[in-house]
Length: 385
Image (cartoon, rainbow, N blue to C red; front, side, top):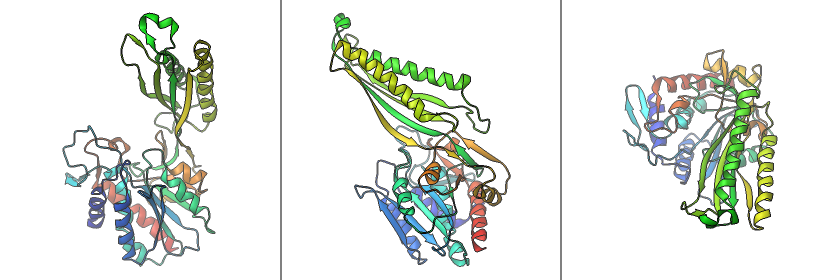
């Protein structure tokens, strides 16, 4: 079962409402104060407003390559969800620990913090770093600045573990993601005069149809990778807004969509394809009204992760996890950014199931936290040399 120290840390972390729309500074202040009691200095990289910050800390010899334990501090909203337990106060029942962020991903942060005394007591030949970020849930925003700072250092970490919930399975790959917002601007009018107007909803619907066709193409004839839970690239329309009354030709419509692609698919090419479709439809709209058209805006982008099974960080993570298998997942993480921006070999491995994330009564089991403790202790032994 999980240690009392881990459970105590998890309770403290859940107690901070770090929903992405809020500041995370109270949690960062707590972690910084806690680490200071062990003589560990922390560095912050704040956002432009100063209301949020990443935190980076090093235990052991900073002049040598070490390993990063990485996780995000923000959580998704609880608005509209029916919780049995208070979401921002940890509850314990039947070997489960409930609360927003319990598995995604404050459980991993709690284990990391709980084992700081053991890290400090060990004679580390290689350092262990903490990288705690903000705004992962809204586009992996904060970690980019943290990684830019790491690039300036003379010594680069040898590897990174991003502790997203994987049920402690080592994940070596995840899909790339690009989210777009398409805004159609037409010409309004009375519905009886529809042919004289430019219907923004109808043109936006054309783009929904084309996005759906791309998704069907992925499923029917696109590349396959059986290690993924969804073994092909996907296209998804999540939001469609437009119109106010049936007898008014709508002048505005908005579509939010995303593509999640395997490394073998050309994500930039897919985005270019939908952008060309928007441009073609815009020309048709402008032929009827010069002020009409469609704009394409990128909402977020997350690079994919593609580590080779024989990479050192993969071999080490499997040893720490006590298992020989590995997997790939459809959801995105900060791991791809650690590789792309930070040039740090990275895997994803953490306690809890992604199936419990973002739900009411989110939980992590004590057994999963105990396995994560064993994992981190394996890392400590490895860094002792």
